[in-house]
Length: 388
Image 1 (cartoon, rainbow, N blue to C red):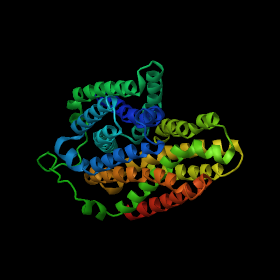
Image 2 (tube, rainbow, N blue to C red; image 1 turned 45 degrees about the vertical axis):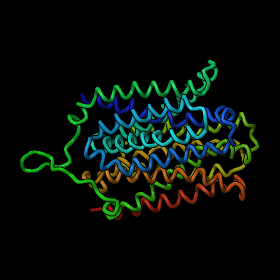
Image 3 (cartoon, helix red, strand yellow; image 1 turned 135 degrees about the vertical axis):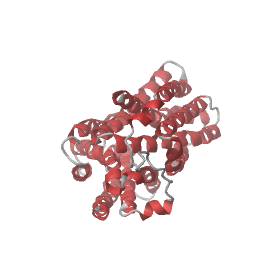
Image 4 (cartoon, rainbow, N blue to C red; image 1 turned 90 degrees about the vertical axis):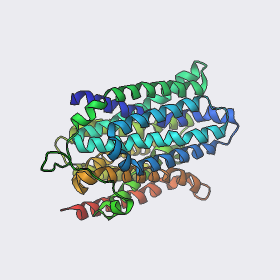
């Protein structure tokens, strides 16, 4: 029974990753059709990001009332509807409008699933869960390429992914009875029933010892991840003199590193603690970022691979360690806030793009390094504060 639910959760996270790389792969064609500047893709990304932040902050209230399975099913369905609406859009303002449910759905899935896995499954499943996100995000550009090559246009790519999301929604709906059966009770009263839990207010979440610094740690991690992921190719063109084609190919090395690393990390969690894996991953990121600053092309490429490998354990281990650090009864509220800070941290990537008007792109290692150092410091402070 639990194995079937785990399979559904993995499939759901593949579905979460599928839309994430669609906009980037389709935008060169989309912007020509809409007649808008290249930079307007960031408008859509920011709107989606704001939607994910809002739904992440609301996840504690929604999950407490309706359950993780129901929130996941509805959120995936909302995302599917948004993808269908994207596929019929003929104006840029329509994309901006439909980006709202797009983000709301994604944030709901992310927060509900992450907390459910953190509470009910072993750490290895958290790593493999996020590996599944990488699978989905890796597959969708090929889906878009297939649609473009087949003459269906970018609309066809969004339509295909919308259909896939609808199928995943059906799987989750059919699995709803399993979510409660497989969930571990957080606490039991004398009568044998789990006492009702009231959702925590934002002030109460921040008042939890060590939580605020953990949020900053997560914010910084996502700033490191998203900035490295988005700007790797452009950086190698300017820093190493790579051609656009070669830089595009090597730019995927970070993504390959993080996906393969999370697959490996699932096995490492069997023997090593979340805290140790976060520290080891952080150390590997330090080496990777330092190598990206080396002028030699091979060193820069290796640096992005190592940065991706180092990032691999940090995200899933931070989430999985949340119930242990802050209490299982608080985990949904804390995870929801973590997701919100994660998406806010992702905005550091377009911020770096805005800085390029005044600074060269070669400052990328220093820019990422600032967030990396702060991430490491905040993690250590959080662990010490949260000790009971």
